[in-house]
Each structure stands twice: as C-alpha cells, then as structure tokens.
Image (cartoon, rainbow, N blue to C red; front, side, top):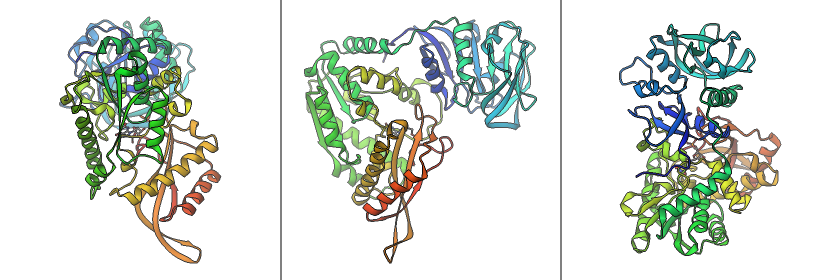
Length: 522
Ligand code: XMP
C-alpha cells in the first residue's frame, strides 16, 4: 500500500540495523528537517522523495563478513552529501579503498575526541565552530586500520582511533561516534552543519504543518467512507480518534475499546469518560477480561504472553468488525517507530520484543488502513493532541504497553497479582504526581517479581512478594536513563506499598539504564 508523505523532500537515512536509526531522524526533525528511513539492502532510493543528503546509520555487521550489508551503488552515484555514522563510516572507508580491522580497540560509552583545527576540505565544514576537545559517545568493535587516499583524518580518540574523517574533495564525512546520541555533546551541531551547510537543506518541518497535513491525509484517504478505530486509552490512538472525528465528523468514526483486564487502576472508566468528553459519540467498550485471563493461565514465557495477548486482541476486534459491514477504513495510531520496527519497511534492527499495540491489526479485516501518524514521533503526536484541545493530563500520560500489566507481572498472570500490582502502581504514580515528578519522568510503573523474601511485620515473620519500581527518563523510549528519585521519596513510596498492600513485604528500585536493560521487564 502506498502512503502519502507529509513532505516530499529532506534527508534520507539508510538503516544498517542500528538500534539508533530513529534517533537520527528524530534529531533531524528537532532541527527542523524532515527525514525518512530506507533499509540498507534497498537497491534504489525511495520513489518520489527528493533527498538533499544521505546519512548512513550504524549497525551490527562487520564490513568484511559474509552477508554483511554493503554500500549500495546508488548512494555514491547520487552525488549527494553523505554522512556515515559508525558502521556507515566503515562502509565508506571500505568502498573508497581503505581497510577496517576487527577487534581489540572496541570502545563503548563516552570517549574524548581530539579534533584537528587544520581542516581544508569542504566536508570539514560540519565541524565548524567546535572546540578541539569533544566528548563523544562510541559503540563499536571494528575501526579504521587504513584510511583511503582520498580521505583525511580530522578527529581521533585514544591517540589513533579514527573518530572523524572527511573526503578531501567530495562532501562526504565519516564519524566513528554517534552524533545522534545525547552524550555526544557536539552531535546536534554536527548534524545541523551537515544538513544546512553541506546539504543546503532548508528548514521544512514544523509542528503547525502537522495538523494541516494529517487532516488533509485523513480526508483524502477516507473520502465519503466510515472509520473503525481500536483505541487503547494511550496518547496515540486517542489523538488519532479525536483527529479523525474532527476531520470527518463524529458520525463517521466508531471507536472500540477492548478491556483486556490488564489495565491500570480505574483505567477503563477513565478512558471511556475521556473519549466521550472529547466528542467520540460512537464508543463501544468490550469486556474481555475473562477471555484474556483464561488464555494466559499457566503461561510464563514473556514472548508467549505477548503473542497470546496480541492474537486474542485481534480475534475480539475482528469479531466486532465482522458484525458490521458499514466500515470502509480501519483507523490506527501507528507511529513512525512502529513502521520502521516492522520488517516490512526494510529496516533490519534485531527484534528484542515483539510489540503488540492497536497498530497491529490484520489485513484480513478487508478494511483499508488510515494511519495519520505513520510518519510522526510520539512527541509530535503529543503536540498535535494539545493543539486539538486534549487535556495535558491525557496527552502527557506515560506510555503504556499493549500487553499491559501482563508484562509487569513476571511469570504467570493471575487475578490476585493483577490487583496487587494495580494498587502498588497506583500508589507510586500518585506519589509522583503529588511531588510534581510525574511530568519529569518519561515512564514510571511498578513490577511484581516472582520471588518471595523474609520480612518482619509486628512480631511476625513474613514471607512475601517483592515489588520493583521503575522510573526512567527518555525522549522516545529507545534509550533511557534512570529518574534520580530521592531516597526520601522512594522510602516513602515503599512504606506506603508495604503498609497498604498485603502480600508485599519488600520494594526495590530498578537502577538500570537502557541499554543494556530495556524499560519493561518482559
Ligand atoms: P522496552 O521495554 O522495549 O520499551 O524498552 C520501550 C517502550 O515501548 C513500550 N512497549 C510497548 N508499547 N506495545 C506498545 O504499544 C508493546 O507491546 C510494548 N512493549 C513495550 C514500553 O512501555 C516503553 O515505553
């Protein structure tokens, strides 16, 4: 299916399987430039996209290994400025006749780069205005052994690891480090210089454009038809449903909310009330709590749980859709990261978890798709939501995964544990809100662990469950830091949980970053 782009020009990002490819796109949009991703094995550039420069992502391959993704000829032949990042730089070095070595000089995390100030080539303009000492973020096993004749080094780490290189004549730059990661302090300047100076790409991406382009897209796509939408109560599907209603009128949009019983405290009522207040007239809430719980009985493997929940959700939704022949379109709040993560669009990052969300509905429904956010990121959808008059409370709600609390109860899911976790989570979230910490946290939640430990309450020995608290800072969930909550705050939450929830006698705080951990525990 062909999808209408909001904008037809910008920068093209070629993905070689990096976990950070979308961060590159995100950073470019932050500096006002529209960008799109194409898979590293694509043998042609995308049709209809007028790109002014190309960024090659990093990736897990080694250039000389069999089956490794190579530099497609159209990339150099396009004569557009190129910025190669990590594996992308190694591909450039190899393609221009240099040598890459594997091995012992791996760097992971922050490094100090010394930048040369004697830069003569045009490509070196990307380093314009930077100090000679820079903190950069590295994640590589291979590095440059021999530069091609036509390249020169402009930055090194550890004395001799090539960290930044430029072509002597062409507008081609290679970076061993990741400018898209926030720990590279000069990363944004480098990307901005590349886009504006080398690619001559003017700003073409602003929040105001999004309302006009998404509304037009919905009207063009749906025509005189009727839309069926699965809503989850999350930001994306809510904003999508409201936008559809605004674009098409309330009679032509029907929202379906499947209550799988894995929701947070009071969530079903809260979501339905909100959707009605936001002008969604046709809302159907399907109570499927028992079905989900039965299917999850005895299942402990995280991927198996995810699969069962995804499939059951689809079955229930399909059943509803089949009862009416009235609908022409299926509306979904699918975001750009979901599109890129699905193999269909050619990107090749390893699947860490199979995601379930309302964007995963099947083609079998015989409805045409309408996905107004297919090219947007979450924070862009939030901006759109505020513009549509949706309350801050809803728009700034923390993300909640499709499989819900089932992936926050480690091991088998049962009713008793669901209730226990719901209460613990509620206590934590309310405390964050009361202390003005909720909006400074990307996501926070409680997790129920399948271990018991010994405690003492009153004069009695207890042998009860452990609850973990997780709070992370992030800009898109692809990487995450730990929210630095004070020990006073944490102990106060812990006291409340242990006091109010029978069955929990220990609370721990998760202090791992992503990577190497993930945000959810399953
Ligand atoms: P991880 O755990 O992969 O999570 O670091 C990154 C972000 O994705 C959310 N998440 C999901 N969202 N369906 C969703 O809609 C899912 O199956 C799913 N699994 C994880 C997670 O909450 C975090 O915001």
